[in-house]
Amino acid sequence: MSTETAPAWPAKKNLFGVQVSATRYQEVVRTVIAAAQRRQRGVVTCLAVHGIVTAAVDAQYGGRVNQCDIVAPDGQPVRWALNFFHNSRLNDRVYGPEAMRLLCQTAAQSGVSIYLCGSTPQVLEQLEARLMGMFPGLVVAGKESPPFRPMTPQENDQLCERINRSGAGLVFIGLGVPRQEIFAQDNRHKIEAVQVCVGAAFDFHAGNKKMAPPMFQRFGLEWFYRFTQEPRRLWKRYLVTNSIFIALVMKQMAKGPGWVRRPSAQEPGT
Image (cartoon, rainbow, N blue to C red; front, side, top):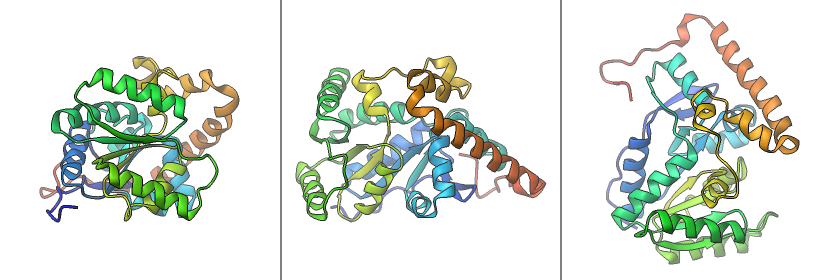
């Protein structure tokens, strides 16, 4: 692993105790690819409302999230909160599936190989074929579907060894919140690559699930579209986490005007 100094990770802002990166696609791709080229370790995640709320109410998980090098604002409400409370002036979110697409595109151009970790063997086969079809120069150094049960320490270490032997600079983790961030942080000193947690991106890019139409995404209604696709699985998640997120926003607003902190001359808006 290179000992060169990696580029600085994007600055973070505090949202309800969760350190969220006020960043854009371009900065994420540039920083992650630069670190991957040096084979430097790093952990990146893209969190929407569900992930932010889980990190805010679960101290153990929140501690892992706050150790991530990038916690990108995946959901529009997360971006809105960053802009409202911190004047971050972000004009778009950093959507996990789109971040994965851009990273794969740049990895293919930069000679950075990738590793796919998560989902099922069938989805991984479809995902690899689709990605290589979109980006002919992309090198998929390996892929693996970990067991859905907790891995033994030996199984975990063997997986990390396989990833390292593959030479991949980027490891995409598609295990879902909170499992993917737990796995990535628990192995951040074992895996010699940048781990990027992208949630449902595996299913979307494999063609296994449909992405929300652009209008739903633009207005922060992706959760509603996904709910209509899987109501029995997702109704409780969105009912609970959306309500808690609104309550956290209202609580923060009730603290008065002191929560708005404008960037100083030394801290330009990102």
